[in-house]
Amino acid sequence: MNLEKIKATKEIKEYFKNLDRDIQTSVELAKKAKIKGRDISKDIESLPAPGIAEKTEILTGPVGVAKVYNELWEQYKNREKVVIKIVDLILDGKLGNIKEPEKN
Image 1 (spheres, rainbow, N blue to C red):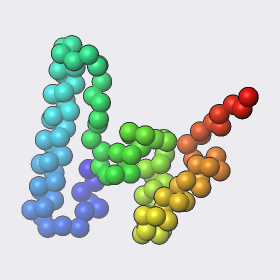
Image 2 (image 1 turned 90 degrees about the vertical axis):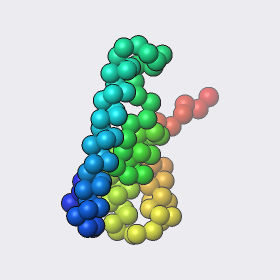
Image 3 (image 1 turned 120 degrees about the vertical axis):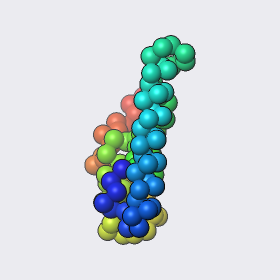
Image 4 (image 1 turned 45 degrees about the horizontal axis):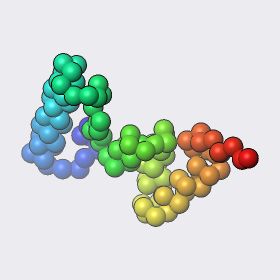
């Protein structure tokens, strides 16, 4: 987590630092449990992410959407406009490298 971007008191920044440390500890513990074969899946199903844009990219993609979302957010500060711009980029083939389904 990039604490420099957070505008908060020293105590709040310390809280987020501790929270981030605890999350990383939990992820490492989960990885060790997976290695021991205590779960049918070898991977952690839902990794932590610093923001909703990054979480969306992890869960659904496309790769690169988080960076574009955050850049567009700085420009527009409006969720609906940002999402519409992202959809336009995907439909125009400029984001996500999503192939069009083959037509019969």
